[in-house]
Image (tube, rainbow, N blue to C red; front, side):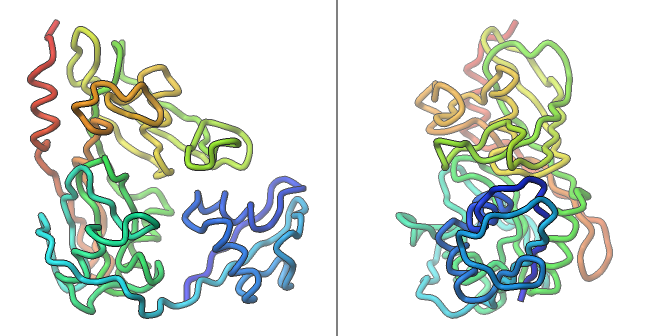
Length: 302
């Protein structure tokens, strides 16, 4: 059973809403309610109602129950496996593939493919529909993703993510001319009115830091390398839009153009971490995918 602990910094937020916001939507409002009703959530050591309004300084502890069997079917979907051992694997996810099952996407996901490839060897910490998933990348983002085969590996990898000790580098094409290298240090939280979106905000937000480096400038856009200090939901996409350079093709935080990209031009290119069992530092780099290279080749150089 995984335990999450949070401290309320502000007063007045409903407990179920607070849980969803602190986990960046990983635990939905409805899932939060179920955890509270099932007695898996306490405030200052006591059980409370779902509509309990937090006070500043309240200590919230959430116990995530062990995974149970679920009817998510293994599917023989080809995987681009960059590295694999008894504890983990590194997968190069194609653009357009959903990482884990969700309403509307119960098949064809990375998890369906992993269940076929790994059989029963996937960690159960993240629950029944996300076996092995330590971190995510968006459906229309391509690139490297680490999968844990057991709970020991999962805990070790999750701890590194929490400590911001992972190496995570991306490449993207963004709109407009980025003049120089820089860093965006702006907290990210869920959008107040559109709950599927994230935004830069000081309310119920978490620290988010993105470093960016210019690779090449084009007539109407810029090819960037980006390094994450933190790993918030949609972080690069939100931060780039925030500084006026939305990721090309981003239909949520940009203008969605060109439509031929079918989503953002964003690739998780490099990942590095300490192996949670052997203690060895491992680093992997993936080649830019065809859609990305084709888009670059069609750009007007300056």
